Length: 274
Image 1 (cartoon, one colour):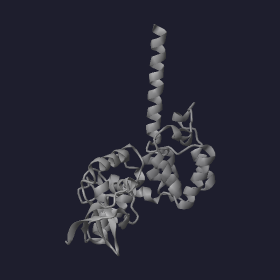
Image 2: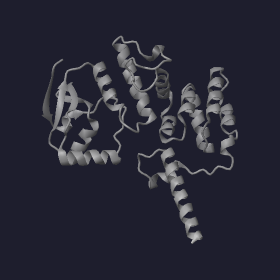
Image 3: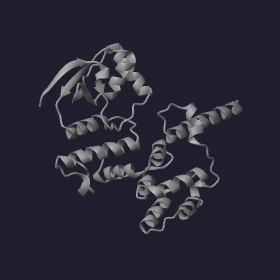
Image 4: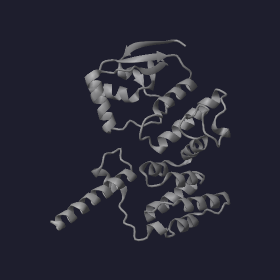
């Protein structure tokens, strides 16, 4: 395999086509940028020739940091590789990152699965076991299949999964609804400011498979009172977003709010005891 290291201008590195991982302006990105400012780019980026430029396979965050700092060049390992080889390397180099969104994992696993199939490698199409077949060393084949199911969700629903408004397991069940049924579900969610529980999502899936999931049925199922929603205080995620880092999920915001309330409660009672 032909490869070599050379210095290349960041703007000559084209981001990988359909790259499923987001470049978030968060604390981790700030730390990386500061490290590049102080020490430079210590580990070469990975790219392959693409016309007159190069397609970046690994190192999108380092490229972004270099551009932000105005670096003229960055070290790049240039390697000849096929489309499938590039996809596999791109996914593997990013899956180890912390705090990946469900949508990022979903599309990454799907891209890698398709690439492995193109290479004639049998993967999690036959799984229900621990996956040690090239897709993941961390998650079971069954779990990987569940992530890939999320790619069947329409984007607004998938965004709700990333935000923590819809839990992972209900989202997997909802992925079996047709796109038209998902659109009806979105209308009901917007109207009622409520999202399906796991049991509701399972019922919707079964009704969809039976050809009985009409807009009216979707609304009726969604608006059933859930035991854990009685006397529930609801605050829209959008109302809280400005008070938290953009990388925070709804679940992280909830934990932070409860922690602040607990500290305020303790401080108040300490003052009363004096």
